[in-house]
Amino acid sequence: MLKRIVQFFIIIAGGTSGFLYFPSLVKVVGFMRGTWIDNPYVAPYIGLAVGAIILYLLSIWLVDYIVQFIQYLERTLLGAPLANLFFGGIGLIIGLTIAFFINQPIIDIQIIVVSQIIPIFIMGLLGYLGFQVGFKRRDEFMNILTLAKKDKEIKVLPNERKFEESIPKPKILDTSVIIDGRIADICQTHFLEGMIIIPHFVLEELQHIADSSDALKRNRGRRGLDILNRLQKDIPEKVEMYEGNFEDIQEVDSKLVKLAKVMDGIVVTNDFNLNKVCEFQNVQVLNINDLANAVKPVVLPGERLKVQVIKDGKEHDQGVAYLDDGTMIVVEEGRNYIGEAIDVIITSVLQTSAGRMIFAKPKALEKAQ
Figure 1 (cartoon, rainbow, N blue to C red):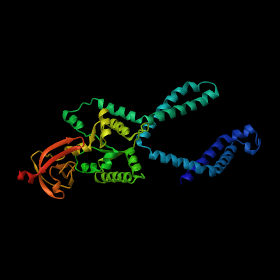
Figure 2 (figure 1 turned 45 degrees about the horizontal axis):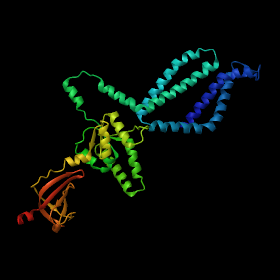
Figure 3 (figure 1 turned 90 degrees about the horizontal axis):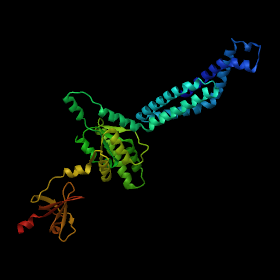
Figure 4 (figure 1 turned 120 degrees about the horizontal axis):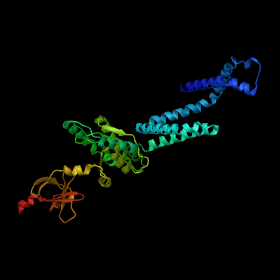
């Protein structure tokens, strides 16, 4: 269908050109002068037919290339994020407007090369530069609009202002926290407020990991994609994709920090280094590992627990057991109880950089003493 439409417009263009310019061509060349073809009432219609036929013959060869070019433009425009098109279009309009005012005095110059060719060049150049500036600096423009919205003083009632301030910030997920998987359970329990933002560049990184030749990386990437599908299925009203991409930034972590600044959002991560970078750049960050450590059950010295000793410890006669949350318990004199479930008494709790370590001794030994 598109091919027929293109051919139709080519034929119309050929007929129109022939109708307008064929009589002048007959006079300049002197072709068939003095005959009925030279008649001013006949020549335009002859030109219309000749132009339409010539352009139709050319369209048989050109139409496929034109259709392919149109389809390429269509795919590019449909695949581009809306923000890119919007700011690129604004930049194009501004560039063409500036070119219009610059060209006004140039058009009045009585030199054909200057008055007709240079304005076209200026319009094309400034239009291109305007589009490029708007397209490549779109994130900075969005940031400016966000800051302007924040700084604008709006007279509202106290209750209305409290309502506006209570709107939760969007949560931006990084690759590590998606692969980890616990974020899906946290979102389902509604402890994480606000919109969940999945940047497109994070999705691309997950796809690269899922396509890795390394089996471990491939499984991690596929797990991350499964978690995203689960989030999209369970809480579709809270999950949004961010289609933008900071092309001047290569690292995904740096893009996340930049996006958090632009959106005034919070980065959700398990990455220790990204956590420190966000803190340094005054970007709010939520670390799932910190949350997991914070919600571990509190165990105090003197409490009694029932645990199963599963292996021997580093020191002589020590045994090792684990709580349900993975916290390690070192049982003194517990080597003889490996494979058994015994009652122990907590003697001390040690907090290390790797987590908590609990020391205990078998309750039976206390009774013996």
